[in-house]
Image (cartoon, rainbow, N blue to C red):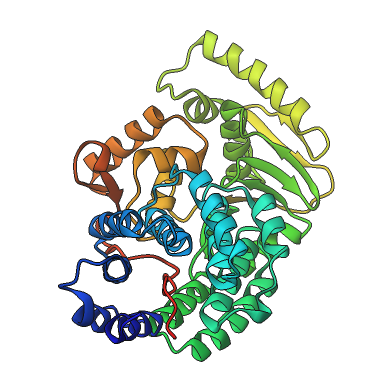
Length: 406
């Protein structure tokens, strides 16, 4: 390996993509193409990064399997940054196996972290947590240890384990300082801000206030009956009744929860549950049927009693009823929540992450675009969506240098 390639690899390892490009920007050999691809990824030009990495993988000879595998891992990183969640996982598995076979533990470990991050993005927390538990970051370089702790913190945050998340972020901060890569330190700081930013809204007794993540965790552990509008469930302590597949019942439960300790009028319940502005005998009959279904569903946690003007929620053991809602509410709040991470998403990636059809996601994106809360970039298969106020970033976890630096 010549001195310019070595110097460029070291610059990338230190988080200096411009320094790397100064050394290899005009070269067309395979190692230079690979390093240019990673530098462009770190600078945010993901399309060019992908093209360069593919050229590099083709340019490496048959005897350079490790170098080709590193290019595949780097391309997978770029795909994840571009939220191409349908990128072929088989290619990444094969590259990881090649790297493990040739003793490249750092890049093989990074390939595993990419797999786990994808699982985290699409909400498969159990599998992500299981795979992360099988990895020991102790013998990895500081940058990889930072990645490990960021993923651990992400899992803990999604499971509402704020103490574990803070501990992971503290370890990640120490590892990022050892790595001396400013972007990694900034990523840990950004992850830490999630713990102090508003995570949900509490609606109780006609009043609203914002809650941080730790306050949400404490609320769910309290003895209150919580109508959880973030997960479409009703919960009291460890008992949870999911209404995720029964939107009418959940709409009734939320309306009753927001009205507690008073009752909710029949016209209000009909409007929220059925979307009807007008009320007639058929609506009232349907309301009685749906309230009966809700009463049976919530039997372990609460009763639903009829009043003169409507219905009221009566918790069995809880002393209070509250509603936990998203910070930004509305029909398309879940799509908007994913777009709020600052990355550009394709409609197929959003569909995979939300577990719904691509057509449903596209209708939501069109509605958000019409309201001015989302915007698209590109056309056709290259079309990506993001929220207007947030700039795009290269990736949440930086690429390691794909080539040896010594």
